[in-house]
Length: 516
Ligand SMILES: [Zn+2]
Image (cartoon, rainbow, N blue to C red; front, top):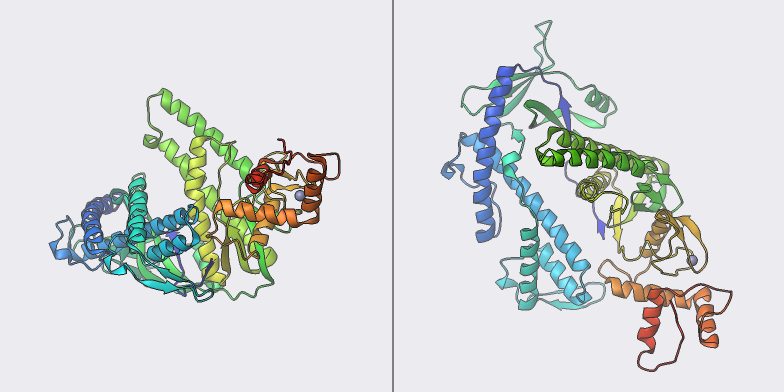
């Protein structure tokens, strides 16, 4: 699945240190409180519109909305709320795709359900019954039936039910120029702050002026022409532990990027964070660092439990989780930047990622999954936008269990969690480098698309292996001797191959002796 560059603006949000006194902070916090109330009310209304009319409406007349803020503030709030809800629905849409791709549906049905998903017609669909579309390459014509639409609705509602809807009671303010204005330093005064941010408050006509200092990092970005000099007309005001944090927005400049490599395949995981098909291991200490975090989180969690407290009510716990998130973000960014510097690829081939490890606690696994996926998706999006790098996703089934050398598939092709060792040809290699090579291979095997089910992928892999010299010599030995003889090749036949052979011989029993 190749995602194209959208050409949309690329935006960076940067923190600017403020010098507002307590009184000003309090007034902004009160405004935030009213803003959140407003967001909640607007949220109810927008969900109602979504379920009855089929879509959110960011321009819904705010006069009719009963909320503690004045009109233009309500408008700003509504824009933000609809943005949040839309991105939530996009996530549901992505999840829908994942569910369909990993389902046991036929490829034909999968294509139809993905079509419905793409059109976002999960709920209001009568007009779609009988509609057809064709695949330009194969000429196959797909017909949407009532059954497809019914299934789409069921899956969509199931995901919606399972996922928590965005909590609008906790949002921060993303304000536009209807309610904030940035003023530059007054040069007539010797001692003055770099900027004054005029923030409208819940009390109409009584704004607060927040003094701000320059951000040196943004200045270097400007000097290197990596971002636009002008500020965008949006400001984010974030609340943390009773204080406010101000973020100003800049448009980033698309980089002049000349690729050096056509493409590179990578495996994203824990040991290391990124492995390339060429054997590079980027972020080798990633897992160790996660284990350190895990230890701290588990210890703190236990202590809180002993005190009868819930982790989410603890400031220390929240701080720790925030630090973990920041670490993940930095490390993922660093490793990808290194990858880009090393290879300057025009295309990156990846699979849907999975960050689970049996060596981390349940809670840690959840946190890493939760943050990691989002951060990586964001980073890949950014690479696409900034450098126009194509991101190609391939079918992930069995990429960690196939030998990239001989093609033999076995769940036991492992020495330990980090080392891949092939039971057939003896290849010993970092497990993720092996996976990265398989990912590369996937992108060149036309019969395995992202729609192919796991079962079919396995069958294709086994049949490919059996056609290789190693695979066929092995089969000969099996039928000659009625079992596994000595070398070569001498390896215990794995359960996948047993299953495959059984399915091939079940009708006419050839009496191949296989044992586990
Ligand atoms: Zn092998």
